View 1 (cartoon, one colour):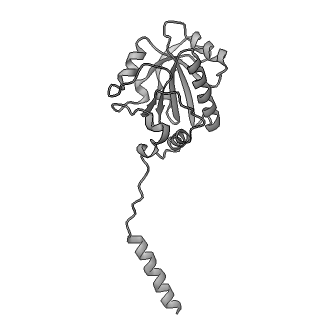
View 2 (spheres, one colour):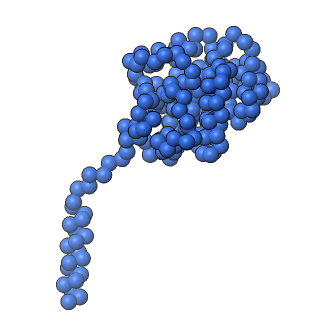
View 3 (cartoon, one colour):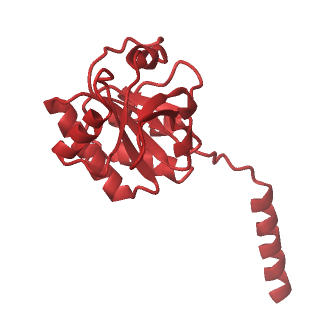
Length: 199
């Protein structure tokens, strides 16, 4: 009886070993449901190296860099100007960053007004109470360069516009609508999956 039982168990393991599985790793399309389905996919392969901005660390003059130095975490890069809808948008992004932790998600606010001193970008965020958001400033012509990445889509140059960049530095999606980032489950699942390297 014991020998018969062992034979059945062995055959069972062998059967499951040869049965092919249909399980596949999730793709970006699996997460594009609900409000995420309205996000735009880039018209080509672009990375954080393609985004040049002006930045200043404490104690130094402003300098030009790209965002490739920020790899290793999800980046939410939002282009903004001081206005009611942008201020509410930044508040949601800061809340999302605080919930996930800055080691997994960093919000970068690119101030669109490139004609003013860099301090304007820093002071604008401080005045609004967004001390935890990283301030950057657009360069001259940044707006047209940014929009040229999305030529397959009819995207109005409205605010807020937010890029989602994965930890490898690839630009994956762009949001051009005023969604609630902290209260939308589909967005939370997407960001968490990117931060964990699942998509």
